[in-house]
Every structure is written in structure tokens, then in C-alpha cells.
Image 1 (cartoon, rainbow, N blue to C red):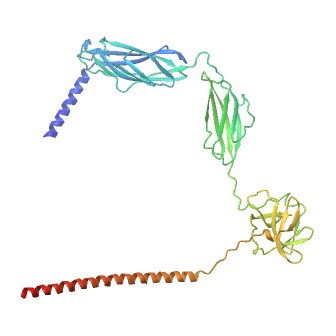
Image 2 (cartoon, rainbow, N blue to C red; image 1 turned 60 degrees about the vertical axis):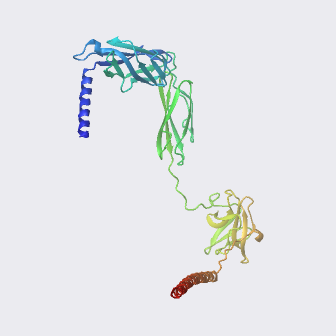
Image 3 (cartoon, rainbow, N blue to C red; image 1 turned 180 degrees about the horizontal axis):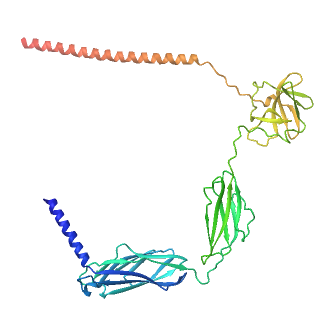
Length: 420
């Protein structure tokens, strides 16, 4: 029953509201700007003109404008609020209009708001989605429609049209050809690791502005970066940078010592005989074929030394990419194998002092006995836990038996006393 009553009341409200809407007057709000051409630093006026007409069956009295409430939205980036009637307040992009208790206006009413143009661009002004215009006396809300005002704010008459650059640089990379104000297109080459470039541009006129597009997310190959210069009066010029990002270099499987002078070392020569390599330096030295017993001296690491185009296993100083010292494992004419130090800069080859060799040996011990002892200890630990559990169980059992016997004895004594 309550639900049916609710729907009946709701339907009545809808019908009543629809009827009131039909009978309400119609108000039209028109936003206008004066003068037609607005330039930077100029003050201009925006008018809010309200016109009201009665609908069929109403009188002019029903279309008399009373209170008016609304919000005016504008683009604060290009214009600023200066003055308005006292019923209009606000700023920073929004003005509140609250003309409550206003004198009646038959047919129309006008509000004038003064703004100042800040910079060149498009000005947009509009009322909020539901401005309220009330008929005077009855206080009924009228049906309202309004327009959106758009107009251009132009540069001042003395604004500069200079959209030239006086300097242009990129990082990383280099412009080709060299920068010149009249040259609009440049080539730039950057390594594979470069995904963005920093563009530095200086304008001839301090009031001109620069925008850069396409300088990030560079792809492998040719990319286009556009530098747009906008003069004070809106004149635009574009400079084009064609940035080529190189392909990724293949990763080498090894980085051996590069051959010097097409594979030839000064003062040291090598030749291959019978499958072995010999070095000639004040005598013949055979490169050790089996050097597994020799390890890199302390502070050295394994590398490759090219002598007369032949690869020689060597040791170079660690973390010293341009080191001129190398250690080789050679066998002399007497068949003695050992370390030799080769000085590329001094072109000398001499025995490397054994005192400078530190060989790290890893001794692998048989830990089977230790593992057996650990297994035995674990077994004993389990046995001890088992015996401890048995002891606790027996103790509890003995306590239970003792308590039971104690209760039975006392029960017998009580029975004897009763019979006596």
C-alpha cells in the first residue's frame, strides 16, 4: 500500500513539474564582446544580455526578470578580471553572479564585465550548465538557454614578427651543417644508446617562444625533431633536425688484445715450427703448449697478445686497459719453463721473478668422515628423544597407578570404619 502511494505521489510531482515548466517564461542569455578586435594589453567588455518572453497563456508580467544567479567561466591564461557590478565576484577563471533582490526588468537586463587581455590566444567564455533566471513576483524559474563566446586575442600592434633563432645546439651529437639562422634543416648522428636528445635554442627576439617536438623516444634509424619558433605577433618558423640513431653494435664473443701495427710487435717476432710457436728475442723461446700448471699472477688476468699475426696466451694487468706489461709462459732453449715479463714500451723480455707470483690453490678435502659423524650424532639425538619420551610416559603411568592404589586403600578404610 505504501509503495503504491509513493508512485502516485511521484507521478503527481512529475506532472505538476511538467506543467510548471510549460507555463514558465523563456529566457535567452547572449554573451557579447566589445570591441570586436582585442589585442594584448587592451581592456575589453563582455556583456551578459538576458531577454525574456512569456509563453502562451502568460502575460508580460510573467516574463518580468527578477533574480539572476549563474557562474561565468573564462580562460584565465589569456585574460584577467578587472571590474564588474557588485553582484559579480570572483576571479582566476570563474565569476559568481548573484543578483538577488534585484529590481524588476521588463523583457531584458544587461550586465557588463571588464577584462584585460594578457597574451595572444583564444578566449572562451560560457555560463555554467544551469544559470537561473526567476520571474519577478512569482519567483518561478524560467527556461534558460545561453551561448558560448569565443574570440581571438591578437598581438599588440607593435609586436615583433621575428621568429628567427640566433643559436641552436643538440646534446649528444653535432649539427650538420653548422648552424645558421637561414638554414632550416640539419642532420644529426647519435649512438645506439641515445633515446633522447636535448635541444638548446636561443631566439633573436626575447619575446619569441620555442617549442620542441620529437626529441624523446628516438628509434633506430632516422627521426625528425621539429623546433618551432613563435614570434610575439604569432608568426611561426620551423627548424627540422633529422636525427639518425645508429644500430646496436654486435657484442664480441671475446675481447682479445688488438694486434699492434697489423699484428707485428716491435723488437719481438714469432714464427711457427712443427705446430709450436717460437718467440725470437736474443734467443729462441718456445711458447709453452701445456700451461695448465701456471695461473695468472696476482693482479693479472688472461688475455691474448698478437705477435707477427700469431695468437699468444698472455696475462695483462687487471683494470689497466692500456698496460704495456704482459706475462708469458715460455720454455727456454734448455727446456726450462717459467714466467717471462714482456715490456712492450721498452721492448724487453726477461724472466719474471718467482717472488712476484702468487698461486692460489683450492684444496678439496674429503669430508666423508665429517658427514658420517654428523649422521651418527643425528641418530643418537633421535634415540635420546625417544628414550626421553618413554621415560615421561612411564612416569605418568606410575603416577596414575599410585593415585589409583591410594584411592582404593582409602576407600577400603572408609568401608571398614562404617561396618565397625
